[in-house]
Image (tube, rainbow over all chains, first blue to last red; front, side, top):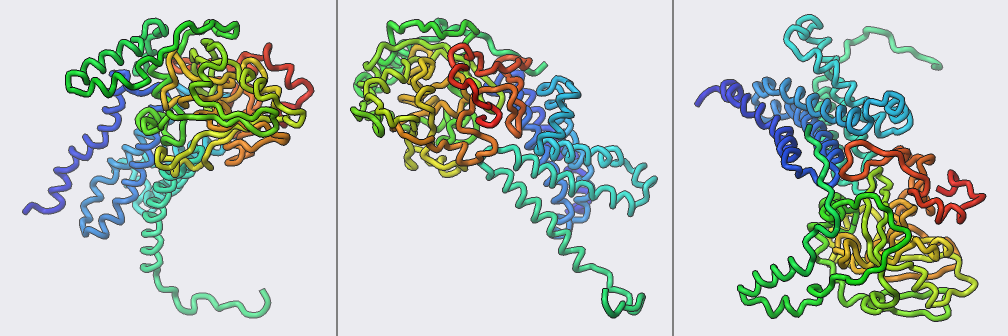
Amino acid sequence: MPKPGLIIRRLKPLVFAAGLAPAALLAWKGYQQDLGGNPVEFITHATGDWTIRFLLITLAITPLRYITSLPDLIRLRRMLGLFAFFYGTLHMLTYVWLDQFFSLSSMAHDIVKRPFITAGATGFLAMVPLALTSTAGWIRRLGGRRWQLLHRLIYLSATAGVIHYYWLVKSDIRMPVLYGAILALLLSFRVVRTLRHKPKPRLAATPVPTGRA
Amino acid sequence: MLIQTAPRIRSSEITPRSVYLNRRRFLSGSLGFGAVLASAPLAEAKFSGLKESPFNTTEPETPYKVVTSYNNYYEFGTSKDQPVKYAGTLQTRPWAVQVEGEVSKPQTLDIDAILKLAPLEERIYRHRCVEGWSIVVPWVGYSLSEILRRVEPTSKAKFVAFQSFYNAKQMPLGRYAGIQLPYVEGLRLDEAMNPLTLLCVGLYGDILPNQNGAPVRIVIPWKYGFKSIKSIVKIKLVDKQPPSTWNIENSHEYGFYSNVNPQVDHPRWSQATERRLGDFFKRPTLMFNGYGDQVASMYTGMDLRKYF
């Protein structure tokens, strides 16, 4: 039995192929003129769905490492996060190009006036620094702690993404609620873990103030 | 480039229903089911001798396939591609529409009576969805006023309330629609009497496919698509403004009038432009969807921002 680390290293190309599969399928359907009556809407929805899914999958790595005792899963996380950024970029480009035709004024108007666009733009912009600093060089330059702190922006990104989706749907809220529930579960894992490993408060570091506040 | 515009096919180029039904009959006949299918009423359903309407637009018609496979019909699922897959369970016969309320001659009209009540016309209308897309559809039907005149509205009748069919067995996805069902809609009486308001029984020269609101629906071309209620079973004349489904759901986003108006944005979508399905670029949306000449006078003096 090879070591888990080796298995995961071998899995990497497979995960990479799987991550590209939705884009490949979309391209194939486009080539086949099989994107339904409103291809732009189809592309927008597909790329948006996969952005949220990859954000959630990326966020699932840490809990999975803990539950499965497979710390080497971390080797997949950067790639999964970059796939979220990849689909997020396609999603954003679809909007900028095929929906707004690069009209800056119209987009600015949208971002200010339409809360679901504001949320979507927030989610995307929060991903940009994470993608830019995803290299080993940047981890070194920033230092592990600061890098980790910065990369907690993914919590904001995923939350904004789910809100974006929730505000978009007209009445059938099942999918955004499902994604929201998964996100809540993944984030609460982190909350519980942090509370459990809370460093003990130092005794008598500062005197407790008394009297009226 | 991924996006390719669908080829524009005139209705005359589409395989007529009778031809493909014959083929189907031939195929199933060889399997021994011929007698069953041959007796189906659908085989002779193709309309003939449709009158041309002066209201027809000359813009290219949206292909039949798009009109019948990209639908908002939440009783059969909330995705556009679901109604075409799931609306087969809708039983459109027998079917009756009750016409009642503030009228001297209330009636229950059987679908066959509706089909013969007035000469059928082909009405090629623009159809603009509140979501920002539009299509051009050759509907079949006649002005709703033909029915309303016959039941003789009383002086108390000020509005018309419509109700869709709803049956949880035939529409199992309806419970996930997120809207209150049965679907209801309403018009002011003068809007309902406007000759543009169509009582619709078909499209592309044929009966309505289930996913498009079979067997009978209303089409109001100067209002957002959700006002054009599908599969109706009740028309009631009333004295007060009746409830309408999307307005009940979210009165902030969907008004009772819901006239197509590029100046009044939906909170989540700009209504200034629209994408005609099949087009790459968007086009400016026209006031009253381009039907101002026929309908604008009904709204003179009204603040259309307030009564959106």
